Image (tube, rainbow, N blue to C red; front, top):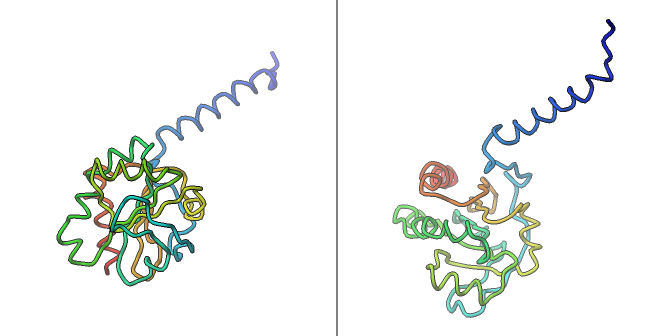
Length: 186
């Protein structure tokens, strides 16, 4: 009996497809999305302040090159995981050791309406020392943002050192973000 290779080709293709899907589901940490900007300077941008957030300035690339390590969080009021991480960002912003080192926590509101951003930060607490409104999403595209939330650790000279995709939990904050901040301070 001769083996008909064309008859088993669909089975082989199916096995390969299942292998790719299995790898996609269980093959690694989805928060480790590579970024071509790691090790490069932040992209040029100038974002206005959010209307109604009195005393909270907008954000521009020059502020990220002013000598202090900065944590940049890209968020939106319409993003459920962004609401979930607010408490962790507040804890980071209030951390006395981090603050004493001059680390700032800033935000970029991605494709959000100013009144909605204001309501979120007023109701849940504002962890940011500066918030820029990226209404069109162009700045976030230049950052290589895949979606929200995303968090970046930027060295004092404006070099992007680390990117985290997804909401920051207490474990992620202490096991990942804080060590990356400490590395940036060296």
